[in-house]
Length: 171
Image (cartoon, rainbow, N blue to C red; front, side, top):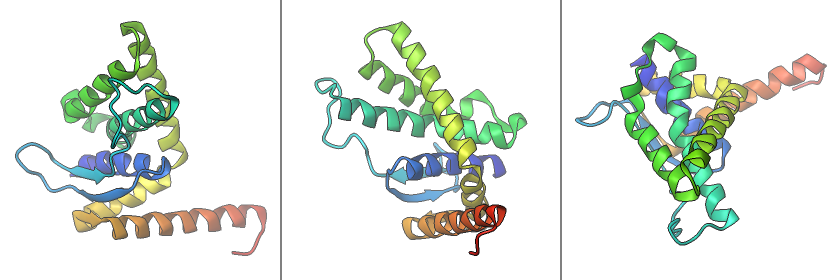
């Protein structure tokens, strides 16, 4: 359950940082998943088969990073907890999206590597948010959009206060 909480928290934070609205998250197992994050579709109204505009490709890249974020967060939390099949559908979705916005197999390979590096850096930079969401998921099992926003705001306030303390500013 711990690993699932960090996996889903990775998806939540990737959405949040990239400006994609999160609707809900849970770590309640069902027949197909051990957890889920429901978020707005950054590709809503965009058909990548026909639209390769900079805006469309940027939105596809955001979605690829969201797909990759769960496994990256889970591995960072506990390398021993991660098995490749834990994020098989996430990885498949990322690969499918990469093929839609790339011109060759080589470009897909490079794009996925770039997205992986960017996602890892994003989560490292915002790791306190991942931890806060994971703790909240472990405590409540389900979080609404409002609850997720509150967890994020509280974690950001703690971080802001710590940063101010480092430089001697009052909070």
